[in-house]
Image 1 (cartoon, rainbow, N blue to C red):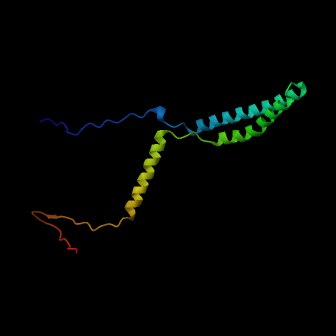
Image 2: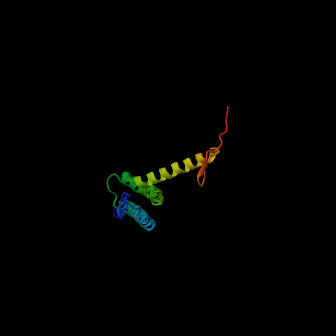
Length: 136
């Protein structure tokens, strides 16, 4: 009988770096790029509107309305998109749900009354069972 342990081997799953959330700096940088690109499109709408007024193409009114809409709505959309964080992954949602469930269970256990616990007393060679109360 060798000194081998009979304990089963516990296999741990490796952590995949692709499952990790993006860092705050990376998220901020991508939001900055989206904001600047949308504001560049707004500036292009202003320049296109000025060019259209001087060129007087057919359907000038329609083109000017489209440019004006771009200049008005793009800043609003750019701010909304720049302030939005990316959606949480399945793993993040599952971890959050598990944490909420664990907190609810802890709160439920804290509210339950603690019953009297009966202990078995072992004293050397003698042991006695606890006296049980007879409840009607």
